Amino acid sequence: MKGIIFDIKHFAVHDGPGIRTTVFLKGCPLNCWWCHNPESQQLDPQVYQQTRKLDGLDFSETKTLGYTIDSTELMPKIIGDKVFHDESSGGVTFSGGEPLLQFSFLNELLVKSKNEGIHTAVDTTGYASPKIFQQVAQNADLFLFDLKLLDSNVHKKYTGVPSEPIIKNLMWLDKNNINTNIRFPVIPDITNTKENISQMLVFLESLQNINRIDILPFHNISNAKYERFKIENKMKNVAAFEESEMYTIKEEFEKIGFIVSIGG
Image (cartoon, rainbow, N blue to C red; front, top):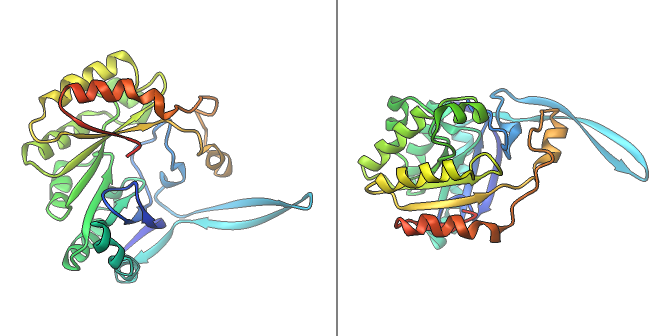
């Protein structure tokens, strides 16, 4: 089966446990203001011009972001890192974009990885139909699950979609005791408001089996991507957070019994 990806990152250490191979699938139903992979949102490959300066002269070249690949071609790239996976209790992580948008391709890769004895993780927004989400869960060893905003209207304002399907899928993971790490992006004046964090604490405390959360501080290192792909950057002039600014939030989550990491 064929799918569309835009990158493969070998020896990743922030996309789940151990050393991992992270495969970035193209396309996402969300349009988050702070997206650090804005080039991932469009499903189809994108042609763009990249300009470089050399000795005061501009040199432009046409490049394509994203390409179609068959699972039989992709799997050897994953299996080739297996010695590092095994030594570090790592594996493969399917990210994006939103990997669930290419559900059939993702599921085939999960099954093939599982058959090779490779630990699998899905880095997801959680925005998918329950049927698709639950089928993927049969073959994923770990979910890295973004939880941004609980108020559905606010969530829709800043991401383009309501929060109800996301919350529903997360509650299903918790009910069925499926290995899940929540990821909370701390975005200035959007997700780190007193109201949202208060709502988050109440909701998280209601979970029975999920007790891990990664706090992801906002950064602006993706500004160049927005310029390159001519995408509106609504966070262009917003200052990045320092890791030290996350400790107050970390302590709040720890008070309700969560194991908290800063930066994933």
